[in-house]
Length: 407
Image 1 (cartoon, rainbow, N blue to C red):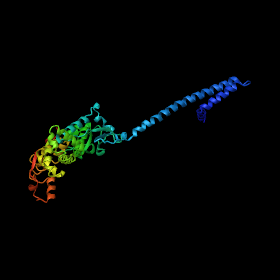
Image 2: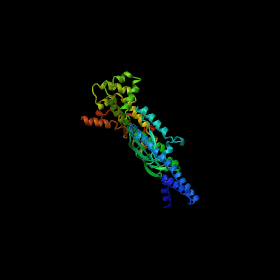
Image 3: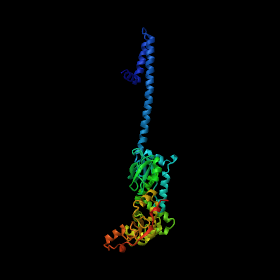
Image 4: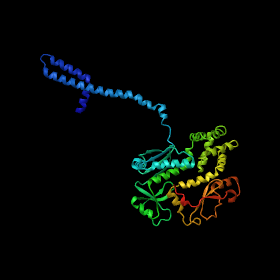
């Protein structure tokens, strides 16, 4: 109550100045106690002066805020808001517990792995993976991460910090106890084990990897599944511009005279969706220039390019398997050790027509079975069900998947 009274009393400094003048007049009136009135007048004037000074300071701050308010409002102009519209093509959001994996100052090696993955995709598939925007997200759990493509989450998983992922390839000597989980890239059953059990698990036959390897492998598969998303019209135009520096006439004969950039984009997207490398873009452009005058159908043009690029297609499938990480290759090799050819392992085969791949566990007895691409072609065209008449013999592209370990 007293503080409120003093606050209200000192708020009107002009009234206090008037009171101090009145008290000073009373001090000079004959017969009035001079000293007490002068003292009260001085105190009242001092309070009014201090109150006026404080209100001036507060008023100056308010004026400054009002002055700055229009400037702050300019941030909401259409030009400034439009700067917020572009989306990052590729993002990796991590919980705070995974920050040491991406911080090179803390000996984190994930960023260097990602750079290697992007280079490998450029060499093998001819697609430039966009730069990965890394950010920490406090809404995620400490060991959780999320991959976002063009603003849409496409993959998410949670790791156990300071643990290793152990996977039984199928012939482990004994079971290792740990926190059961699923490997995120290929949905393989696995367990999280502490570092103290790492040696025991490896001796038991388990494949043991660190969290960085788990994330890198998951990212590789996410990139592979979303290569089509990284080939927009702008990216296609950049690829053509780069090719035009080496072979300008080839590009001029195709775009825009015969086929639009959008048409080229659809063909390239179809190829990478089927894991066909587009690195030999010159051959693709020349093929499109030859056949685009007869048809503009992206599906037909893709078939022409695939036929022209067949040998490189099979090489790409071979390279693709070599890029699979160690633990996936090993688990694939030994998941069914009793089946396979004479060496006790399944053999990989690639259709010489479409490039689709399959495995043969029959020792070579089922090599001529149709792949999925040939089966779809036969079904749509009503051709014979004879596998050999529809799907040529599968070419063995690697006799032993055990050597498909990533280099």
